[in-house]
Amino acid sequence: MLYLKDNTPEIKFGCAVGKRLGKAHVRNRGKRILRAAFSQFEKKLIPGLHIILTLKEKGIGAKSQDIAGELEKLFRRKKLLCFPVLQ
Image 1 (cartoon, rainbow, N blue to C red):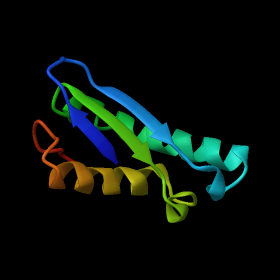
Image 2: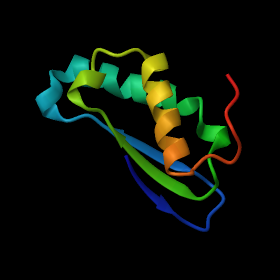
Image 3: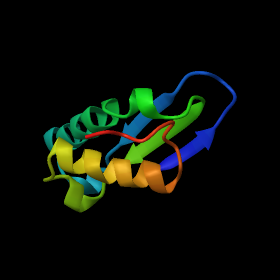
């Protein structure tokens, strides 16, 4: 994950999956998983973030819930959440 804090009230998001991870349909699935996992946290992040998420090789076979759990850990560690996420 790469991120940049800004003074704007909006959050900008992008995702990338490299060609080394598979053919186009595999990479597209990876991007869909990243977008679905990120959508759970979009309203809970501090405003003014520019975020780029990338997917590693072992994330290709993962489910959206697994990726969301990892994103939550990452956002908590970097202190990017406005308030705690309730499950």
